[in-house]
Length: 107
Image 1 (cartoon, rainbow, N blue to C red):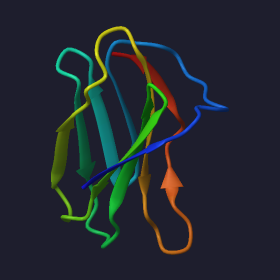
Image 2 (image 1 turned 90 degrees about the vertical axis):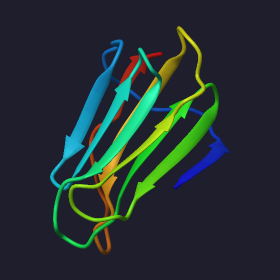
Image 3 (image 1 turned 135 degrees about the vertical axis):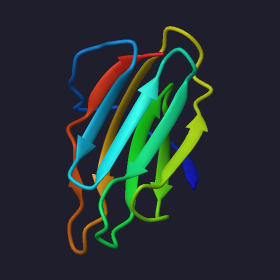
Image 4 (image 1 turned 180 degrees about the horizontal axis):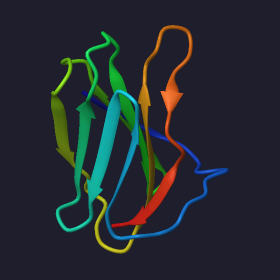
């Protein structure tokens, strides 16, 4: 599932690169700048859904995966070449999400 909204990108840090990946126990997210593909894996049999937050061109995309361990959700980001993208991955634990640090890349 994908949701998009407008948002400002404040308080983000990271090292720019062409493609990258972030992970926390239970979730993994990868961005491939060659294909603009976003991939979100659920990596734990814990009953928690996982999600990624992706910001680019003044937009925020929320990507969800509630399909269980080993599953992957994939979508393509229409960001174009040379644009900044920042993202993080989270496990939706009861009461408090566990999230990776923000990562900054270039499309």
